[in-house]
Length: 376
Image 1 (cartoon, rainbow, N blue to C red):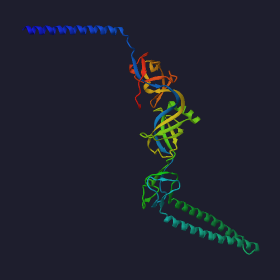
Image 2 (tube, one colour):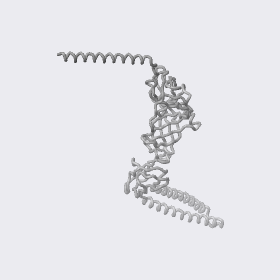
Image 3 (cartoon, rainbow, N blue to C red):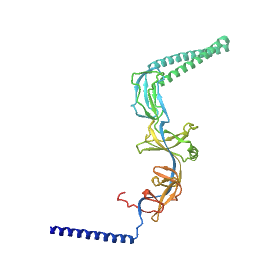
């Protein structure tokens, strides 16, 4: 029993000593902390330079590629297809033979017309001999003037008949030329809608094939009416430019404005613009939708990443870091394009602006650039 009292007494003494030690340590640490000066808080941020450089004034839109020339080939005769001289979807050049139609009936009509013409020409020669003979006999008093006049009248009739015969022959030759169908211009041809032996006629609603010109091509798109005045001025100076890009690809074609529609759509406030693209590599295909960029002019402006621009009730602003201190700088944003904002007022170029870490900043906060990781 006495041994238990000794153990309990020793435990109480130990706990009391430990409590005294902890209290003294806390007092010492608290006093030291009160005496040490507090270090100013520094925020790590990502910075970017405000750059002054040429920036295009442009308008983005969605456009449609249309061919400048497009023709649906049709037969001008009632006949049959003899030959098809191209592969479906092939590239054709101006003058290439595409279809051959049956011309046997026209060939027979041409031979008949040539025979009629030869007959009338022979009759004319005979009448002209009579005119010469009657003229000699009139001089000798061996015939009457009536015979000479009749011969001259018959010659004039035959001359007119021969002209009609020649016209009929020429018409048949033109009809025969319709049996040979050639490409009127260079481009790409569609699949043939007829095969050898098919009967065709002018009244058919389905064409034999369609040829579209591939280079150059039109790109048609719409722009807001507010940029119409600037666009017309740019067209007068030749500074306008059109860039058409296929969505999902980096391939694009450059061109110029070919025309502006003569009226604005009152329901949408948009005006149709047509650009002409060289398309030498056939990047643009008729009928596809493309992302168009109309560049009206180029201006020397200050640009910053769009993520640097913050918004408040009083307007837009950016944090500018100078000598390790972040300052609020009000700015006026003119426009944004491809992740960059064009600053009309507030920056001169060359300033360090904060692009990440703005949430921890206020006017006058100390800031330092973050350390860049290797390869960043």
